[in-house]
Length: 196
Image (tube, rainbow, N blue to C red):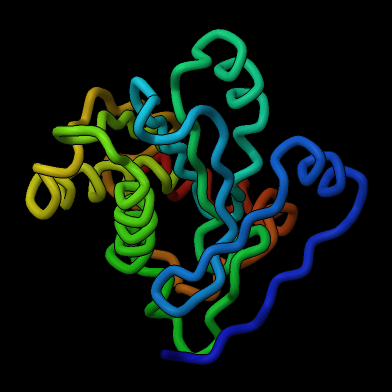
């Protein structure tokens, strides 16, 4: 296990998020990962919806979707994770390898396997994957791994991919842990490259 640095988040927006979602930190792969889980317990949920953020994002960026879906689809379990180095999750400091799509997908798979332990129903647990930006690539990689490694535990009922790219930009790992406001300033620099 490598060394990690704790991410501290504060301010009025964060305080509102804690009030809305609570604050749950799970140990996944030896790291502290913030998770957001809303809705009924796994055994009584019709399905779970996993929201996957992109570079510079965080689990709570889906707060509006959570609020709407809690009211309109109360039988669905809503899930999101602060990927390593984002939001309140630990930031690995020993190498950039923790930010590869494969490693990020492993974190998501580990989280879902922990969720599955709580599911007491018969048969596979129904799941919908929602990815935004880099989260679209992670959703596709997770879909593939679930089909290959956990097809008896999960049944994928849908994929929603928003704002992704067919071919991801090659970015250094340190860039994936930068705060969102810095990435927003840098966005015009990447726009021309991404439109090629």
